Amino acid sequence: MTGNLPVAGAVRSLWWAARIAGAQAPFDTASLRVYYPARPTGSDAERLSGVIPADPAGAPYPVVVLVPGINVGQDGYRWLATRLAAEGFVAVTYDWVGELFAGQYGITPGVDLDAARPDGYGSAPTIRSLRPVLDALAKIDGPVQGLLDLDRVGLIGHSAGGTVSLQSARFFPEVKAVATYGAHNMVATMLGWPAGSIPPAQVDSAVMLVVGSADGVMNGSADRYGEDAATRADPVTRTFDEALTDRDGENLLVRIEGANHFAIVDPVDHTAARAFLDQPGEADPSAVRSLLTQLYRDFFRYHLKADTVARDALGHGSELVSIRRR
Image (cartoon, rainbow, N blue to C red):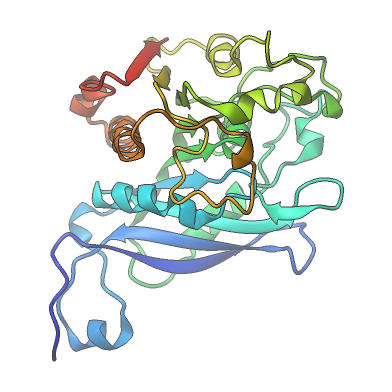
């Protein structure tokens, strides 16, 4: 055997797939990537296959699923998934290329338009991809088989992925906490909602809404909700105040000064999605990513692992962060 052994505490990943029920081929499969804490042994099998066992010490591992924004590829969230795995979670990203609207196709969490309309809202999840992804994880083979705690699942939804997570989480009893970035619960007038509507979030767990002060994409979408970008109230603040129920301080609204809509994505792919609407980020990108890591780590440590120390540490130590609780 030759070469250097991987360091202890390494993070590795594997690929898997989920079939999306009701989707038409070839747009009926999501490609998953599963990041896990690994324990290298230095064996010949590792050297020849590239497959490194999961570290059983922290098993069963709670699972955090990163729900993507429209046309944001899963590689843009790899930095966060890797850091979460290093903190003792199994983190899952996925790409589903499916129908967006009006015959357009792209990466999507899959919005169930019937469930998102006024006469269907609250009767079913508006996200079509999450149940297939969770069911696929229950059948996964390879290094993490038998090491996932699928009764302790957290969601991190970015942009539209955050919206459908807020509109759907209560339909998934295994979901114990929901976090978002650059997301709100406003609903589009094209679906039949009155201008400015924010219906109740469909979440039975704690929620952490995270947003940057330099988010240009949300303002660039104001007309979708029948609003004027120059005069509208902040939709994330409205979501926190109007769409969430009080949870004795466990719901959080976190604002990061100088962060933009795509601060959670690295690298940003300027050939897709709507980064051209974003404002220039004024905060150091690496500092923002460190903050996001700490916020999501501590939020899920508390709600998925009952770590009260993590709860008390949430958001402390940075001048860039302001937090409201309810």
